[in-house]
Length: 92
Image 1 (cartoon, helix red, strand yellow):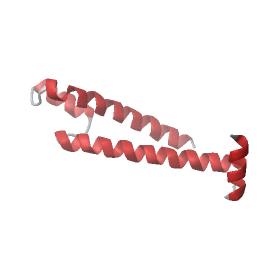
Image 2 (cartoon, one colour):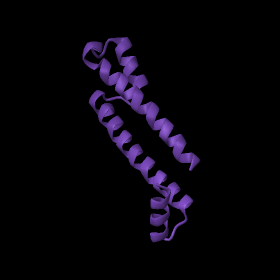
Image 3 (tube, rainbow, N blue to C red):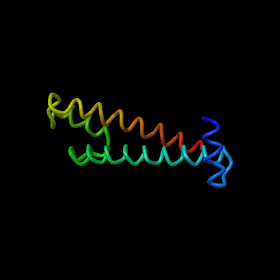
């Protein structure tokens, strides 16, 4: 792989570290966009701002857990992954 990275870096007139950092940055940005879109869909579906809001709806009995519990866990996981990737992006 190192030779491939070196060849691509040379073609793009970058050093290998720059290429790897730029590639990682772009990859993380795309993943963040995907996560943000998925979170946005869930927020629209339930008219909420976060998994915490959805949990509050469960507690108040405003939505049925049986039909939406999986969505709650999915949203919670997506928000967690979003925070992780945002932190990773800051480190680049």
